[in-house]
Image (tube, rainbow, N blue to C red):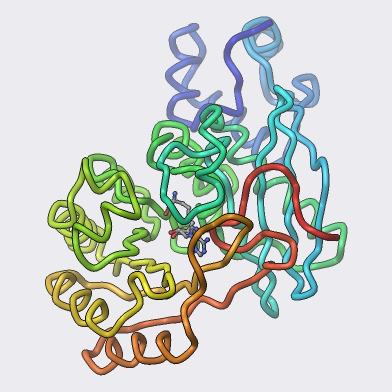
Length: 347
Ligand code: SAH
């Protein structure tokens, strides 16, 4: 079986690969357009490619990918959770959030997750493997097909907030983002894409040239608290993380989103809100508050409504743009931190 998969290669890499085999560089543009813009999988239908090139591709590479939706759950609020079967039989979850004309894909980047955040359900299943570039992109294609069949608008936004830590799979993620945003590929606007990370500091600059948004799961206002919740803190303490965020904001010209899961009685008090403002002093940012979504055996509880209001009020009074994330798809275990790749949830 051919080792190279054409759908794992951004256009530039495809060009290098073809040139090495003695073909002209522009053939990569043609091939790339057939694959991504026209969605072709039959080499014989790619009329403008010379026969010799098609023969080379047929013997040296593959193009078919066998991803499918194993199961689909629909929430009472319109959120859909898809259990996506990968080529080797493992499964990940992809979520489609619907809001009027807006359709947001919450995409996965790994099967499982190794980050071990104490409050996250995905962390309970250890990481099995990275998703390949083609698997990452396939979630987008599968969801758009599904939306088209349902007569709904196409995906307008993508957030990498599903299963896995995107920057722990940075090579495949970056390649997937290049394919998604390539004008000759899927031509999806980079400004409509957000990559969320626990804060793998050394990889953050890789996102700058791609033009995508950055979200950082902060979840704590000081080192001691963060270390208790997120093991990654030991590798990259808050000062380093905040400096990396400031660098991203400066170089990309984009504001950084800090996500903050509010855990009842743990990190949701007024003192934490004030500490948070001081911590982020030098960054251009906004804050997304996520009230904790409970799951069986989580050991944490959702914040009290009044604590959320006070927390939000303090940030606002300091001039911070703060949003509260509405919890979506909770009845089908599709909300933040509830994805386990098992297709759980009532139908
Ligand atoms: N690994 C990346 C991408 C996943 S994003 C990251 O952590 O950023 C998933 C988001 O949901 C993160 O902001 C995480 O902090 C949050 N989250 C995890 N468990 C949660 C839960 N039980 N309730 C609410 N939010 C949760």
